[in-house]
Image 1 (cartoon, rainbow, N blue to C red):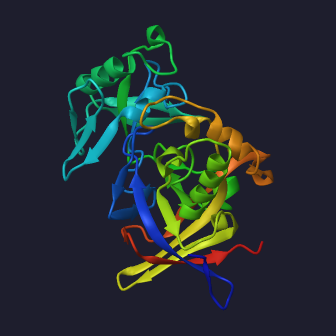
Image 2 (cartoon, rainbow, N blue to C red):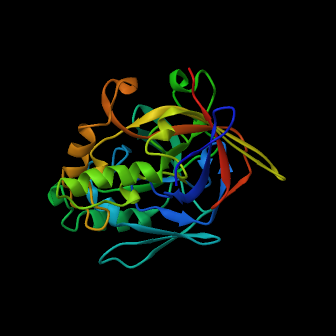
Length: 302
């Protein structure tokens, strides 16, 4: 279905999927509803794998992280991976303090203990796809310290303070279903396989828009009896090689990146490939987002 354009030039879109990624770079969880906080969807990128020096580890270095499946229960985060017993982590339990680095930010965190550390160390050393197993050192699992405010780039937020946890830089990533369908049409035409949305790791997937309509939005708004939600679209999402990694096998193939390179170079981010829009939470902390809700999408005429 094409975008519904309102009299004032805005669009309407439907929330098709809500996804959180409790452990940075591991598989996500699809939810029927999700609590919105000022740092994004609740428990999104609340945990992160780090190396022995406290530096963050992602699929860029360890594609095998894509195979770690996550499940959220009331009081537990459960992690499963091929060849491993399930790892149960209490959501509200941590051990000692730990300083970790994500990109240029050195942030306070909490260590999740030796059992979790050994679990990730062992799994990543099992013939790590795309990496030299001998180079896999000891890992730790860190929990973000919620008392710390790690702010998104003020340059892109227009000076608004937008905290996030262990995401690459912003609280939310928004994508339209039509954008993925457009990419898949190009892949199939080139004799390549279609890919799933999981490769792009969005938090909110919208239907009812045309391909890449999200690029030209300024705001997403939702009005309910419980309150208002306002999400500001702030920056196109530049893409690293992670979308080339098949989340089912952890193997990389350049088809996705090569295809995007042909039509998604974005001058707003220095000519990098972009796919999706980063957003911040301006109103709605504590609100529930639900599948099927209709969002008013305000176009950016700037």
